[in-house]
Length: 235
Image (cartoon, rainbow, N blue to C red; front, side, top):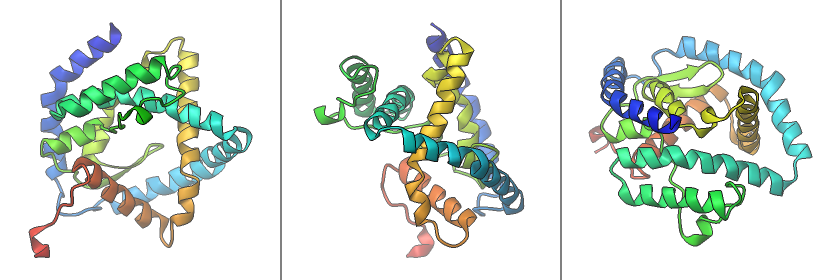
């Protein structure tokens, strides 16, 4: 019931999120990173926190956790994320993707033992990672300037605002007691950080610039479903 209530609230607030995101995103839209001074300060704070806490925790987790268990944990949280993808696929008028994501949740939650085993992908049901930032992008809301959020890392104005409705669609937020909910949040953060350990070796030069550019390119790729977007100036 709480999930349905949150979804109803989200649908009622959808026009407001679109208007606010569009208005803020247009401010400084011609510049990718006009707030670089602020962003670099937050980035340095996040780097220190990561170096002392998140990265060591992720390395320890990866060291003691068998690969099969680590895969199961990632599958479990991926299954929960499919719930938000269903809603955002519907908001983007992607009916086939919504049906596939719904089917994924059903099969993985039952046959896949709560999502620990991904049985849906071998059945021909691909995963569609959709979030509210992509939904706003689908409806024409520009990304706005690059923004580094404390603790949360790289983002932009549109995606930063979108984290509010995304949190409303997160099944982990429904878990009680609160202690168990917080443990799940912590496990998801560590599991996600562990998945990024190998990618760190690909970062060369200025880490801030490399992470910024990679984030902006990936978000554009996701919003446009992999379709290339060209500026008129390129021709």
